[in-house]
Length: 573
Image 1 (cartoon, rainbow, N blue to C red):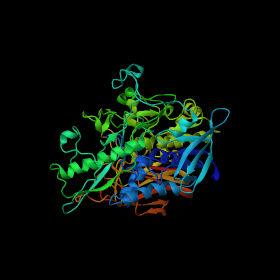
Image 2: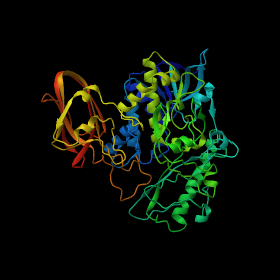
Image 3: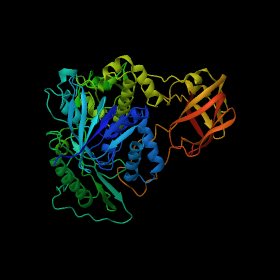
Image 4: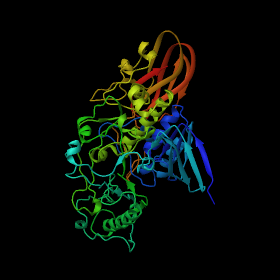
């Protein structure tokens, strides 16, 4: 008996519901693109979800904004106890209730159909919960699946493994190329109690009686210990061997906890296992090839590209392919001195005309991937792909390559307006803000139109106001206003981790940053047109319908704790 097949016709199909995938889908949908996201797992978030529980890492000293910051701030506001079900729910609602976006969970892509020009015509997935097949026809496809299943099925060019030094002049590359990768991990979480907790290991757990059994692996319990080094798979097939590797990782995880609890003093008497990952979190498999391949040199020299659409800044964090079975240092750790740009040419296929990608499968060398693979960076890549598709569709269904060549400034403007920082670029304030006379009771008010929506290199780049103060834009003639854009300060120097690794008795509840504005209202010629009493977001976009307005005024009513707040942008359109 053949399974029922449901056909969906959309403009844009995203395969993979990790952080890169949901950012790509949401960004395109918010631009009016009819979008569908197909996710093989029962929840969104990928490695950030409760199935894997890896916190979101990103650029050192240059925290990411855009959609990933929107999600993190929502979590700080609504999830004081860092409960993973609440975090899952936030990501679910961001996708499920987004206009122009259809979602298919528990649906695994297994087939790709191409047209006579070699473009992808459709993808088909099996949804195990409904025993139904879903065929999705679209103009554009984004492979955000991590393992690049669509690229593989479509015949897109990709690489797997490590390059040799001579190809890109990389100091960390190999004397000879190989197919080894970074491995995968099953993360372990623990919880502290107010009395001793006993642990009886399963008989099948591996035995680690002394620290010498696994050297160079720090394992004292603290707020940053998530046992990432419980890693295997880099020396075999990181896709085909996943199930076998999961079994081995579970033996290691329970064996390590047995060591911590029952062999030596690790300060763990009152600690118990709270959760052990059953789904391995992957670092590397197939890397799709675009018109440009990002390399070690780009990461370490700042990656200056005319078609920049995202940036990275995580260290070159190359894990030894032997993983936990390697007795030496588990990884390299070379920190870039500055954020490096990532060009749009790394985010679309060089041989499949309507295929894009975002996440750990973009066009990089193995060494560069060891920095770009972290989820905050992948979120930026996803948002860039979503905006690129929106731009391509708006200009008559251009290919990603044509769009990158002819409309890169438009894509960059979309990203900057959506609060995505792009190193070396300034956002242009909207016309009415540039032409208006600025007044008010705060300080440094002119900074709201300098095009820099964050503090950089010690420079604040913002207007400064306190509760009870205001800032106004006065126009030379009455204007019709349809949108107001505000960017507040979410403290981009804060501890950026979206969730906890372990749960300590002394942990303080999550809460919005004290630097954020909590309450504000807006008046037009003295009449109130909008009021917010419980804001938790950095970027506030307010749709309005106002006619014949001579002055728009923002009034600061309250903050989340800081006496003086920073306002990076007040724009009207």
